[in-house]
Amino acid sequence: MRNPIDRLFGRLPKPARVALDWTLTIIGAVAIVLAIKAWVVNPYRIPSSSMEPTLLCARPAPGCTARFSDRVLADRVIYHFRNPRRGEIIVFKTPARAREVCEGSSGSSVFVKRLIGLPGETISEKRGYVYINGKKLIENYIQPARRDLRNYSAKRIPNGMYFFMGDNRASSCDSRDWGPVPRANLIGKVFMTYWPPNRISFH
Image (cartoon, rainbow, N blue to C red; front, top):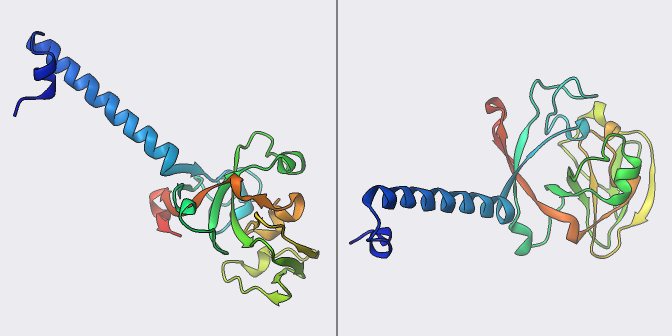
């Protein structure tokens, strides 16, 4: 079977056809990578300590414990087929209010945090423990020393909105500070840490 380039551009000299073939192959490969990045899977770097120790950020940033920041992959397709679930780590567009109240986030276009409260639920925090509709939430991913001992008065999460918190509760600027996040802001579910090599894991 003849190469499509040969069929379409048979009158061109062979070196020109080879160069054209390589050019189109490279352009096609780049287009596929960009499409995957835009619509399917996208990488993100962890810039702050709000998700320590689940996701690490690099020293000397405040509260960071690692030499290199974790880099994660987010599935940008999954929430087109199902609703977000409590406990999932999610990448979402930074809310406008967060830019105002969170130190160092003015230039951040996305946040990476854990989904805690779902639409229609009532959420509160007492002495470092979260309560959903009055029932204590079991969170094995929170280290005792990283709990926040402040109280958060019970509030109902509006329909279509989601309540996010960092795993490093004592050092996380999250929905307790700037409110719930609309569904439209959600980008994707973090499913893998891919860098550095010793941190490769699935979430």
